[in-house]
Image (cartoon, helix red, strand yellow):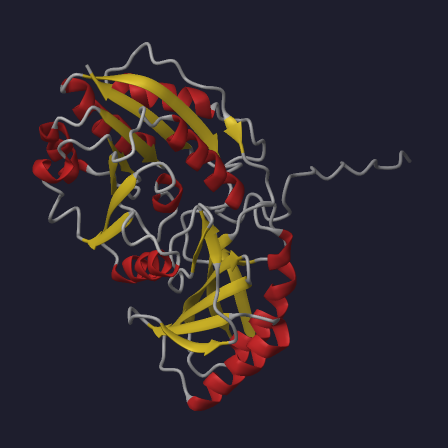
Length: 366
């Protein structure tokens, strides 16, 4: 009788691939992301766009994750959702996250199991900052006093600078702060809000900042840059080293973080932050007129409401940071129809094994 030869198990980049919805491809280079940007710009009317070489961010560097947590009987599932499903894949490994995340997952499961605020499901957002993990628990019931004591114990046991909590859609509140959570943008120390938006990795952020700064026009001593969708200052403070910056952001907590940082860094005369919902109240042409450049990093849906006012302002240089090729095609198309031409287009792959591509596009009015 012939012995059966076992079929070799297929090796993938992650043991969860095919179940977890975090990765779309097993081969990082299955999708030509440079071609994705080229196609988006062609739809915008820039058919002959010259695309810079793809800048690749290493895997295992992601510093932000939004984990689903689910109580299933006596067990706690903690991880990402299955593709096109609400089911949670219990995370045991991840090719994308910084390695510091994984040892924190078992104690987080034990913590979640003990919390009365978790009845069925919620989320745990972790931003890994320079001071360590900044954790936001958004669960489906009120946090009790015993819950809060457990959070203090957890923070002390695992050296967590801050743990914040929220029930449902409520605004987060700090439950414990052992030290101020900090990271630096352009050399300026910023304490971001709980669960606040960050670029996926410090390495990806550095590539974006480099491409944005390279796209600036020649600046004079009193040059002014208008920045839209400025967040907590990811681009604001690097830009402030080259010109005065007027930054606009709709999120109150992000504005507060940027304001506190600029005051601490004594940049009040160099940077001005204004809270403004740019989808409902776009910045008007007069506010952008005579700016050396407009820099914008809109959310995934793009900046359609703002674009026609940028065009009407007559600003010569626009630097657009995009995480959505579809939104970029629409918004860059608006600029193209108004007589802007493309100076540079840089694709950045800070989302390995996914369909997503970050882009920095520089346009100038002819």
